[in-house]
Length: 79
Image (tube, rainbow, N blue to C red; front, side, top):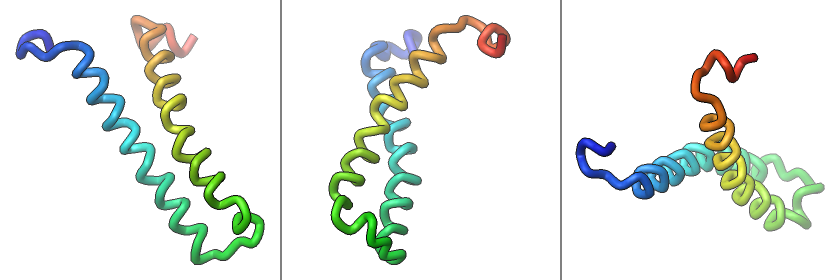
């Protein structure tokens, strides 16, 4: 990263966006599957459920980054 002149902010923002896109793929697949199943419990609150699921990715990815930077070695994370 430093060798090619990439700033740390650009590196981490790019990784965050890519990880969020990877989170969105199964989430959007789940949301698409809700429509043909026609579950009546979701009919009234489908917009709310979509908003909650899409907003859940930001803290989830942030938490995984926080947990991964807490440990210097993978072996200490398992203890």
